[in-house]
Length: 253
Image (cartoon, rainbow, N blue to C red; front, side, top):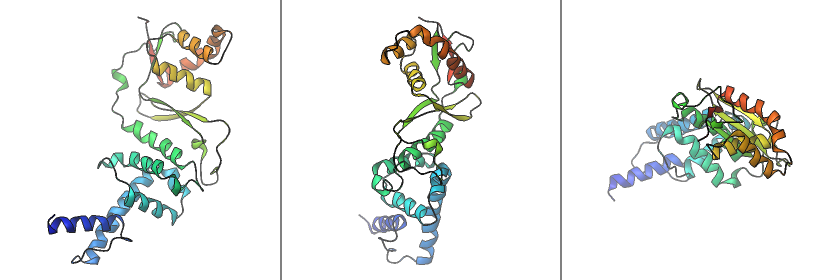
């Protein structure tokens, strides 16, 4: 390793964790401080903008301490700024000891906040996908949008705020639908467990009719009369088509 390489590595180590790694010999503290503050503040600001709820939960001492741990310890898999959010989610998943006692919901909340950015940046073009918006979602095959995600969490992450930070998970999980519509707006919707399961069935089994999906759902919950579910489910399927959660239908093969 050349002397230049050694200085570069020492300089990078100092920037990531100045409390542990001193300024390399021969470098002026005043100039190093400019880089040190600029890089950390950029990362802190970027994470704060991607995770605004998490930022509001942490006070002026907690927030920089959390970002510093991420900045100093996490080995990112990408140098791209727009993917730093997913790296922060991965960091929280790898280090529950940093927050589990006080905010055990933090990793799930981070994933929920990240989903909005991820869908906003997704390259899928809904306009290019073929489906009949006027079709019958019971007799024909509903077509799920690739930009509609069913998310399940132990904690009600969509309700968390500074004055509501649960330390124990509720008895029932939280199901949420996050999707991007044809107007490129990211939207959120709470789901009942059966609705979440139905949409998952549609996503995982393309080419099956709505009636076939209902038969599967009825079998899973031991419902004696699948046909009776049609009246309850049809308005939901049509609403999902209106919202672009379902793009429409296709005729059965």
